[in-house]
Image (cartoon, rainbow, N blue to C red; front, side, top):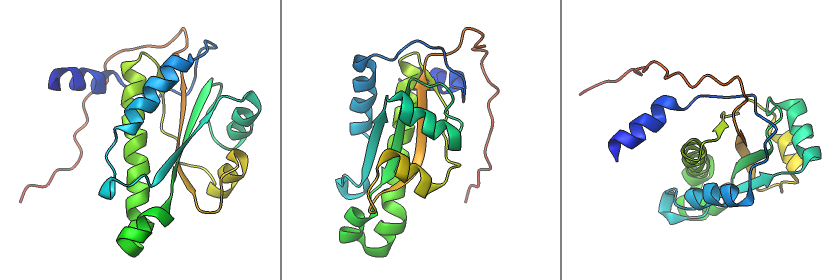
Amino acid sequence: MYTQLMELSLKRRSIRKFSEEKVSEEIINKILDIIKLSPTAGNLEDFKVTVIKSREIRQDLQEITFVDSAPVVLVFSALPEISSKYYGKKGEELYSVQDATIACTYAMLAVEALGLVTTWVGNFDVEEVKGIIGGDSKEIPVAILPIGYPPSNFDPAVKEEKLPEIKYL
């Protein structure tokens, strides 16, 4: 199992261009099934996933991010009000955001395992994205995943391993 996860992690790339091939409902549902398994603080459902297939909404997002021509876009939003009920200020400011980003990470790995590509988009105006997706005042978009199949010129060469700073005590 570790070997499979390592292989998956080594071949994953941040891809911003996609082929025109559509992503089936079956594939989208498989990704959503994995997201449902992601851990959350206190086992709370303190995040929301918005699945965007509408060409118009994807184009609106493309204008403020670099989701390009992805046939499917997932927006992960924190729901701080839910975690604040149980964890107070720390739940509001941290746990719901962590839970949404953990779910996004699970989705990224699922996308790769299913033969698709994506990239994590975090640089966007929260209020603009919320307006585009029709988010309510209680949700905070924290990550966007454009999802699709790789373009024909995709180079799947294995990337070099990078070692983050690690401190042993």
